[in-house]
Image 1 (cartoon, one colour):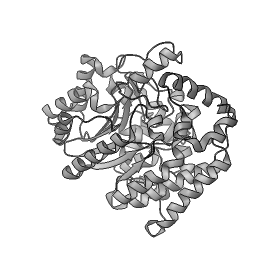
Image 2: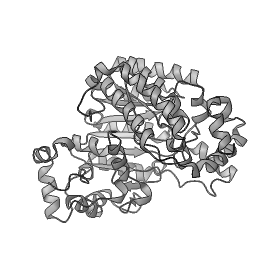
Image 3: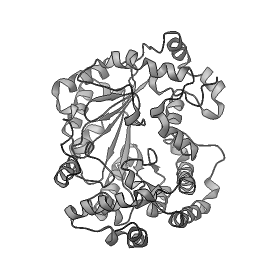
Image 4: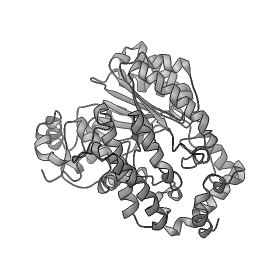
Length: 430
């Protein structure tokens, strides 16, 4: 088929709900270019999924690229596993053998029906990313007000935003009940991934888990969640043990004090302690674990040590995509000279473990038998990225302005955490 470069099976089984209740067709899309969004308060989820995004499915079936899908294209360019590849694999499709695997896909009849019906489908989303809101105790410097209430308050005080984000959809009992009804009525419901804010302390998370258990959905659906490793809630853990499968994501940028600057006001020693506690619980209950990282202009210098920790522990490590927002946190701000030094260090670490490397690309990032191979693959994607993405010195001044504003509130300085960046930052006007 000629549409393999832009086709994705995700719109036939997956959906995302943002913290403000916005419904979207994908967790990886570029929100600024999304033409198909609507809000749970304004529309029926079933109608939205089956008909309102028909135009999107039609675009893909006709081989026309979708503007809001460019993040996946960039990941594939640098040989990083994209969201598209992961979603294709869930329907049995692999890019390197696209023609034969789409023909054998369990969804092939659904693709054909949609082609004949102008993009419509009779299916319902079986796989969800559920953003519960921005209720959070952290104010990560690379995050945003829609994902952190603490950061939102700080941004407003500093004049970085003029008003606070919209109310979290999950705080509305009526919307929450309507959403649970949709999940309960979905045949073959498979996977629910929860994000915050900080998921563990978000009140709606506990409510949803209890409702899912009451309706027996804990025996049907796997649960995914991400925690920032700053809190420990035994009641939540007890609820999670009642589900058939848990995919636990643990957010950390590096095992260096710069993690405290980036994920303010966390303390790396406390983060390590909570990380080890989670790993012990996960091992006891046979949960799948992954470190979740968002490499930035500052943490990329310490990413090698995070890879090494995950490699030795044989646990996954995943960054959803190459960071694009906020723009001043992008790795591409670094001069090539600095990138070359970091790339060489990561490459040296990769070369030490060449005996684990494989020729074929690993797409299933949750395959326990290929964890170490995937870690090496992901590390290589960042080497490729740093080598090939153009410098962006036009953003240097914006970076300094942003850092200075936040530092005026937090009474800290990036130079105390990353003195090796002084030359770069001084050149940028710090």
